[in-house]
Length: 108
Image (cartoon, rainbow, N blue to C red; front, side, top):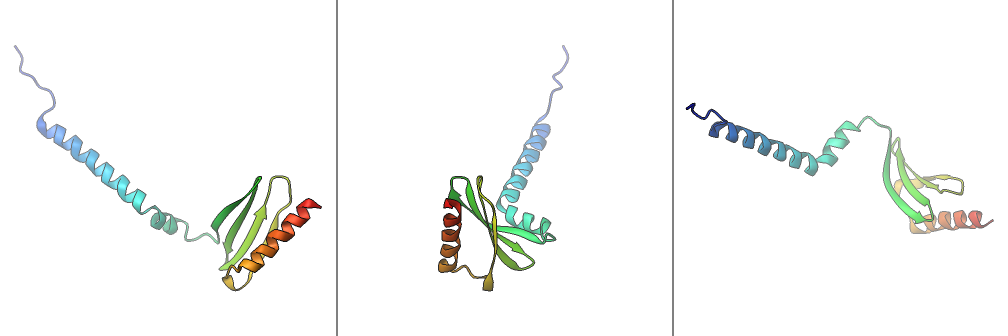
């Protein structure tokens, strides 16, 4: 009767070690994906800083282009609005005025 010649303990340990290494690599990538994506995308001129849904298909985006911030408002059934944000600061009154003007224009 022939002797059993299947996988040995060292083969099982090698496979388990490889799987453990894959899981550690996956965990590292998930934890540091912002650093990795920043490194990959560092040569792009335009970045989307923030996206906010305004309702009924409307959304507001803050774009950073050449170290200047822009507010971009778009909607399904209406036109788009692009406004430069001065002094790289978001003031509540200025944004509220832009939103109010946008809503007034949509009603007309």
